[in-house]
Length: 360
Ligand code: CP
Image (cartoon, helix red, strand yellow):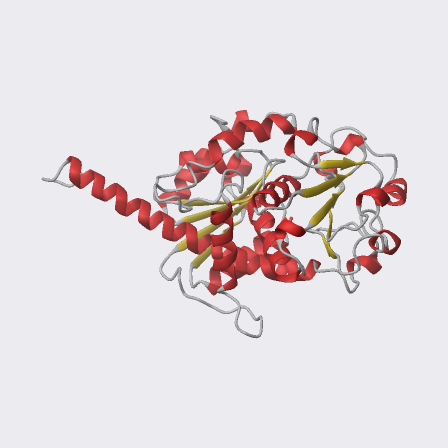
């Protein structure tokens, strides 16, 4: 577990990030009843906890499949802190927060005093002095959301909007909601192929963990060796370097973006070589089951990871993923706020038992 942000900024081997954070993630994000009070990662959550998030998200659709408003966060203040660029995550969080009736503040990190050298800890402490109930954070450092959960006062919920290579849990859960809603078979019967830059992808880590917890046994990762983390087989996935073999008869094809900003030295020949060997083309989609779903978390590099005709084609659910992201983010915000309220109640009861005179 990182003890300071500078610790968590060190370049890690991706496996060690996973191992170090996994062991400590489940407890801090749950209250004593096993309900979320932060949402830091899907690792450590059990099947029933993931199903609760999916079921809650489903309540935000009407019978026609349209999103509804539900003022469950009325009176709550949510601050969005995005230290890294984002289109989908930042905007769908804001839409979700407004649909829940929260007061929403988007902190402009590019113009904040972090640019004058203020530390993350000081930024947090100043923002919490302005009174907030939830911080949604995206940061380039693996462990940043976990670090924040240990730094803020215990009545603020932290929601991880993506931390370094480590985790992107709301993306993982919106992918699960999309599969739940769109796939013709239950999780236990699915074969899922994840193609691309697994090594640098926080989405891949959250997806693999959530798929396994929800009962998927056939998870295939397809990439050149240079884009696979060391020892990936230990996570119960099957590795394919040949995409044509890997996608054969699968039910879900998930593309991943080449994370150029996290690739230190050249790991690929050229974009056209990559597309030739690993691009998701119509011919390769035809090798999967006829009703296979095509997914991609975005942003997409068309003509590198995926052909435009596939991204925009009949089997693509890529824009449904974005829409489902609003429901999942509404669910996570609402559940975390509820878990915080339960946690605060339990704390007050303990304090009253310890000191019945003053209640402190
Ligand atoms: N999928 C995803 O995280 O996209 P953004 O970087 O645009 O938020």
